[in-house]
Length: 189
Image (cartoon, rainbow, N blue to C red):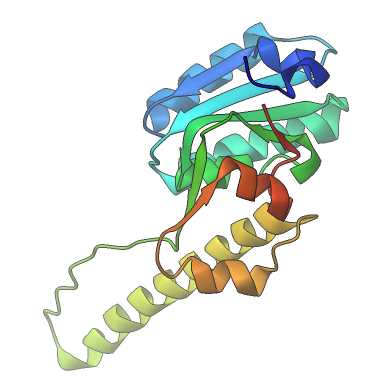
């Protein structure tokens, strides 16, 4: 048997909230139900395995975690298992870096937000400018939202916002031990 840090963190053995799969409204509903069922004063442990999904749902779940801390003072702990990709990392950013763990062999994957859109220009020429400006504003706002999440993810870690922005231009895969060494998580169990 290999040495393990797990005995240092007994609370992580039995997460009250266990999430896996695509980050979507179905996961959000299951998340809210499990949080409701885990009412109390003990630390709330949330585990997650995901290849990604809807970043806005992930932001909403992260905001729920923040509200629990802010309004109840309850400690919230994150345990990433196997894969915490894309929207999963967005959700993880809702937990302070000192309250994040990964299981051995897990990986994080961080990347810029993606957009697929078709812009149909149809109508009087004088109105087409407004269509283009509206799309540009949507892109600019999405970048601001992305950057807020990036800042939350690296807050209190050894990774700078600028470094994350640079590496997120293409998918940045981070092994559990590297995530620990960078301070993105407290430890690996």
